[in-house]
Length: 341
Image 1 (cartoon, rainbow, N blue to C red):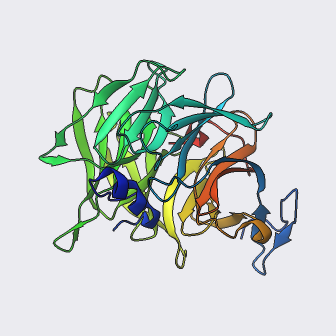
Image 2 (cartoon, rainbow, N blue to C red):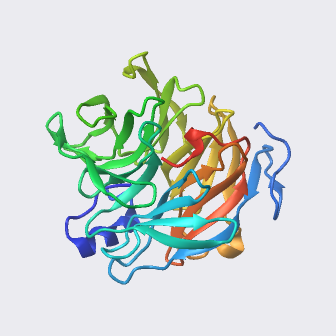
């Protein structure tokens, strides 16, 4: 996710640019059309589950993000560009292929959703206003968890991840100022009282997820098409940082990240309805893509949630054709780090 104008109507219409300026396997895995390229990398063709949204007349687009499973197995999804009064969080029954509205308000532009292991509430990042909002699991009782400046600058919170104690790690997706990257990774204590900048100088950081061992964070930078690794110390603060993967996305840019039980990274793309899967050592393992026959009118595959304890994965796909959920078989089982963010 990226920089939004302030006016409500043009605010979300501009999100379509979202930059705003947001050889392992030898055999292909697919339930539809298996294929493998000359390097032996898998092509996994996802299958449509259902269309959730149409382009909103008020904002000129729809953009699905933040898939995450609740305790009852329902898949929750946010629509970043939904106007006030229309569903901004939807609850999806992936088996019945049905959905229902869960939450709306008059101003939020929510770019991610994640449940806290501390209080069980659903947390949403409001990219446009710099807030983090929490809800009861049924969509009731909205509260502002965090708002305001950190080290003298307001956030553009994009994605978030929780540690086991319920502290939040947020990608602050600011872009450039006077030719310098000013994006940050921010840690917010679980009570919302203390916020700490863990890393700065990032180029529109977007995806953020703990690795499988919870030793550090994977962070994607939208405008540099790279994934960094931020090692944490025993207090949850930054110990070191390095560039881990340089993503060859062409016109597409790095969006959100999820991690499976084997530590593989699922890197969403803005600008192409596809995801790239990497090993924790940066080896490109597979490409997950929408079949060519269905790809017209779809421009992004922003994020994915893998069923906790299972391998069925559900990714959010959007474009002028609408907002969709597509499914595929992941390379390993899902965990909390595979559950949106």
